[in-house]
Length: 119
Image (cartoon, rainbow, N blue to C red):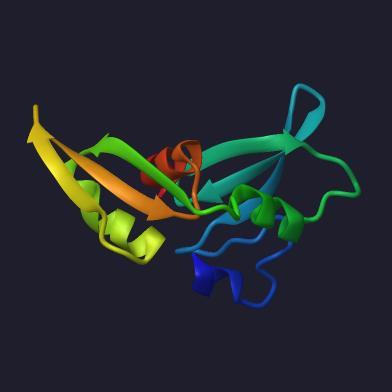
C-alpha cells in the first residue's frame, strides 16, 4: 500500500489504478459518496463534500498508535498480515481451521480486519 501512495495522482478522486486502491466518488439516491475501491470491492468512506481531500482520508484510515492485539485468522491470510504490518505475528494456537495470532502494528483491530477482508 505504501508503494501505491507514492504513485503520481494517487491522491486524486476517480483514479483507475489496477493493483492499488482508488478513491471513487459515486452517486447513490441523489447523494454523492466517497468509496475506497480495490479491484471489484468498494467500501463507503463518507458523504462527499467539496472540501474532502483524498490524502487526509488516506491518513485517517491509519491509526498512529502501536497496538497489540490477538485475533483468529484463516491460515491463508498469514502472508497478507506480514505484508501489511511488516512483521511476523506470533502464532498462539490453531483451532477449528483458524490460527490465533498476536500482532503488534499501527492498525487498530477494526482496521486490521478491514485490511484482511478488503485487500
